[in-house]
Image (tube, rainbow, N blue to C red; front, top):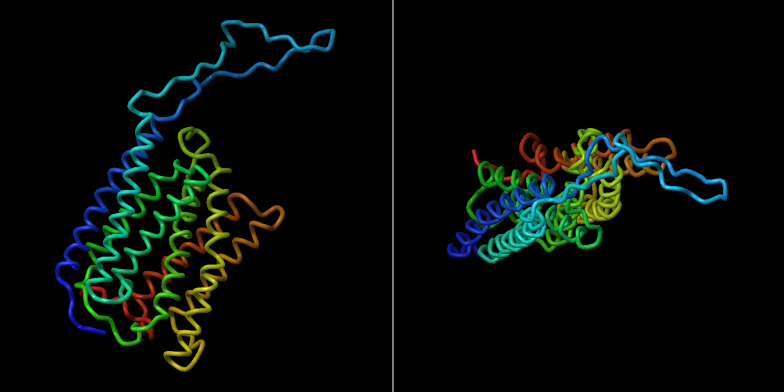
Length: 319
């Protein structure tokens, strides 16, 4: 691997990351406005009257009185109808800038651009936004936009502030095609797990009076679909990691901290899927299991690299 670094591309990558953060922030504001003002709201205090059955078997309209007015729907402001679509457009622009930063970082150092903690977090945020945007094309989950973009913004901000290192070569153990297989699968699965985790947090904190937020059923559905897709990808990542370990260190499993927590994360998400499929163990209880699994994932991705040692200590966290 050449030791030379293309300084111009490395600088462009850093600038694209800053542009990504700004675009995600503006998108987050747009999603928030869409949640707050962009959807019609039925006035409170209106109770629908049951239909009346006539002698001939038909139905008659309920009597209209001052105590039971017809439901009135408040139309959103004209400008608010554009907030959601504009936010989605800004998200796609941020997604493109995020992708550009990853590609230019890789081209600058002539390697796969996830050889340290900074690069991995950038790629993980990209995967989370990608999961949201592409799932939104099919399932119309725009209501999660504000929360996914704030998670991506915080992740990128943390990586730029505390994890960023200069572009350069990696240790020989990471100079392998297995990076493209094992780490890529872990990044994709992590992005889907992040979206599920955001849904799970909203599920637990949502109040019945929060009419602007998505329903509990919608949040449960999004979390479950994301995990169903992510779990086999994470399983593949664990298996690919074992194969890479055998090639690099001559053994499939060595109880390294990263290996242990990757397996714990796998068990936790398997427990969620089992709980979700078990009669009588759904809703809040299953969502708590999912968030425990999400906490294991975050510790595996961040905590192990920072606080624990082992053969996977390639975080390169600045001192």
